[in-house]
Length: 348
Image: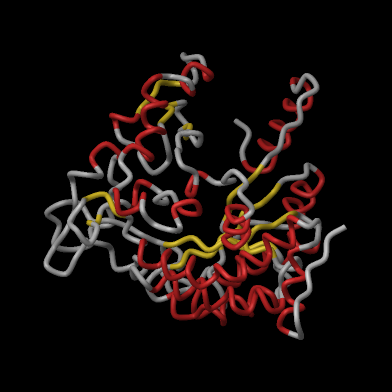
């Protein structure tokens, strides 16, 4: 049995043999701890895009990323990142914005820039506890879309969440703190995916990620056993679509069950969201996070709604200006001139 790098070498060789003229793009998600020179060279030569999980400088990264023996993983992860960057591999650093991470916004951003990272994504940590659990057992559950409107998980203090979960408003403050520096200094040179997703919405372009699309259902997950589920956040028996070893993959994607799963995101959207001025940019975000109630008691509101309202409200004036620049055929980076003097937008 092939393992490690040899498996990937053979897999990409099969791709070339059977691609039949098609362009195959490979991505790999890793914590980077086992990346060495051979891996880095292979990933560059095969044009992989690599997502690397790194939460910031050592004292931030090690808040939640100790290994199973309780040891720091920071040095190994950073070594892996540096090897990838030295080889010219396309690297997107993923920062998981957990409860204690959220208070280090600019420190994280400055650290990543100092390491030469130019593609960054900030993912909020929202982990529900099982119903009836008094402590964090390590088992975290999402809300099925069709139950989002009538299956709230609440307690005296609000939703029952793991200790790692970011605060309802903290994620928004985290994003805006970084945005304020990015929009003044780094537009076009540091690609923060969260901000570029928002700009796409302000430019009236289709959402490039399922989080902010009106409907979902296009990100199916295939397990090592061949089992196919509707989404990696909904790997429950009721969302099993079939097995890729026996079933036609296209039929699974187009199945009534999967189409209903994707449509449920839009169908279960609360009226409160439908009246929100930022609906075009948010669309209720991910259904797995829709387990709180609206101010008038309607279920199905996204837990992170306060964060998104703060964030979208804060960036609106800048996004309007950048969208106008883009519409005139000018780079969005011209927005930075506004902080040095009057911004004059001219088109051809």
